[in-house]
Length: 300
Image 1 (cartoon, helix red, strand yellow):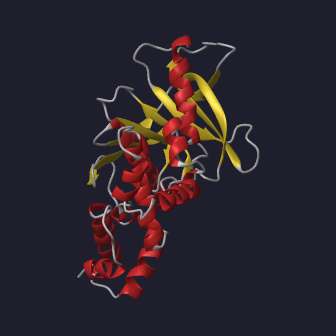
Image 2 (cartoon, rainbow, N blue to C red):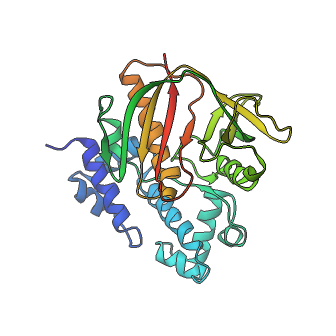
Image 3 (cartoon, rainbow, N blue to C red):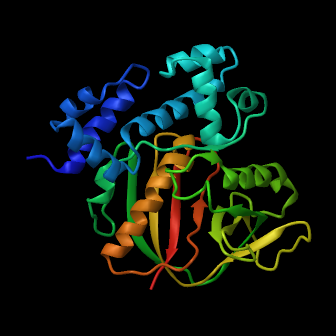
């Protein structure tokens, strides 16, 4: 017996392994042991994209990585990623990200990608203190009571929800990533605690309708002030903490973070817990060698 999500996950894995090749719907249906009709129907339901569109978005994600190498011609990248021509590639790229491959290569920016789904995370529930290992992601839930608030200093931006949510399912400019880039450029001017934590948090703040405020900052001593920068305080209270690891730092702050956020929402629902409107992501060491971070979820 095979669950529907297992059958579709097999085809997701197949697509990833053959992303540069021509992929036929019939091949995928055979891989899932389903008729083409039921395979496409289940795929759209579970992945939230039609098969062909999903393949295109995953090919674009691969292309973005290859574009970082200026030694590779854009035409060669287009063909290597399964696009039939330079024109087809450019059109698809601009539809997804709002810029052309040439513009991206000339002035690289952080982009949101449609992640490869891990459908098991929609169905597997774990207890507190029990690690879950799935597709290169290791995560674990625990509770912690913070007795004193923690102050962070950094920068913030107003982010439109469209193009950013849902995490791992939207394409376009990664605007929270741009806030992080600004923080890393300017943090040398802030009175941060040596080896202190860094935080990223989305909340409403003074954002207009259809947007949210995103803050990225480093830990400072209570009472620290600097008129040039914003501050945000992590309130003293009880939290459910989702700690997770990934194979490398880039995966940690993109695919792993997106999956951890989605799984955390499901986990809280299954445990009859309600989360407040903010859920900080906390980094204990910003060096690429430590590929671990935590989501602190204030719950009731």
